[in-house]
Image: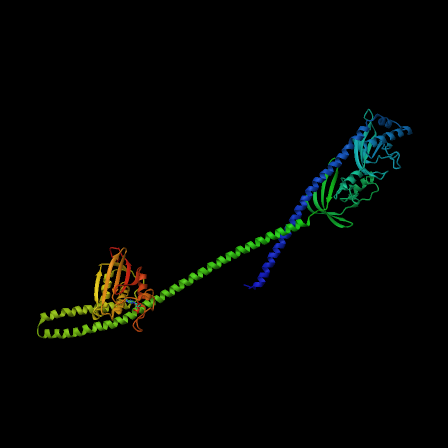
Length: 588
Ligand code: ADP
């Protein structure tokens, strides 16, 4: 695995976190922008509906006017025959009056060929009177369908307007001509230009003919087909007006009639929220273009909030990660500590086993000396007894010889038991051995081993042993404990004139309590807490190892018992307690 240095890794992480903050901020800013745009678009769309309504109302107000005028008998009769100058003058004035009252742009009366026989603008140089408008689609529509409508630039006046016409018919429903009202929208355009929005009205071919701002009128929103061009030429709808395409390209579409559109103008490209609303009756489309207003603060705030949220998340994760690692580290240290403790305990146990063994060997050494002394004496005696026996047999004193055999036999038995004990003592008993045994018998055995010394030193022994005192344990090791206690007692009483040794074995609740009490002067108060410590000894160098009690203590504890020390009377008292074994039968 490639090892990356710590500072390099830190730099890398910092960069990743910063990159995350930048990405989330950018994302949030985009989102805020999109949201603001959508809100703006929704508002614009509502406003557009209001504009559409005002346009619709304006048109509706004049829609009935030509139909009503077409019923005027004077106008009808005028169209039935040739119109003389006087009649024409009267008609002109009449239309002029009505036009003034209705506040429409122009009123004109066309005969069945489309010739304007009278018009409200008769006084102006741009008067319609005498011109033929038979080529205009609204005229043909009126002739065939009874009414017509058409937006066009006036061929005479050059002023654009919406022509609404109605057929004038005689009593037999014969077409006599058409009554036409022209509406112009400068007022509407002026009214619309109050706001900052761009408002456009385009016709079915996508040609803008109403705009509240200069430069937008007569722009093509879509390319024109050849047939469109031919038709425009025939109807002279926009007459001499030059139609130029409006370069635009949708950047984002919110819905069919709502987009974010880039418009290429003379001053470069500008992005608009572009809302469209089709006006079904007219076949037009109303457009509202608005410069998107995305407050810098909104975007910045959204970006900052997102970056903040990201950093909070990252630091929270880092914090949790740190905690987790710390917990893992603690767990690992704990495990390591436990392992070490276990290891040390194992080592100590091994060392303790070794100590037990070496203490045993030391005891064995002492015991060997004692045994040598113990065996030498009987051997000498036996040699003498054997000589006596031979003499008795030589003299045929068979009965006496038999009697002399008895002490010889006893002595041999005792020697055999001593050596046997020595053999078992020397071997390392497997730890954890739990046999059922009588503690009183262990006391006997120990006393037997120390018998010579007890006798030599003329110790006054008092025994109060409850028999049998069943316990579970290892006879050899318990014997070793007892020998230690007895030998210590003997050592303590060695130079004392009074040598009382008392051994008491009694049941105390669930325990057998074995006390060894001596008259050796006791243990100094300050030594009491240390007597069970390994290598604690008050004996001269060479006499004591300071291991006896430590080993004994360990042995007793291993067997589930307790060993305690104290002072009583003229000497020390050592008490060994072991759980009473209640089991009736000795397991095989
Ligand atoms: P050692 O006998 O080799 O000194 P032990 O562990 O058997 O080692 O005994 C430790 C010490 O405890 C002895 O040196 C002695 O000071 C004290 N001690 C043990 N038994 C007695 C006793 N019965 N009376 C007085 N002191 C004792």
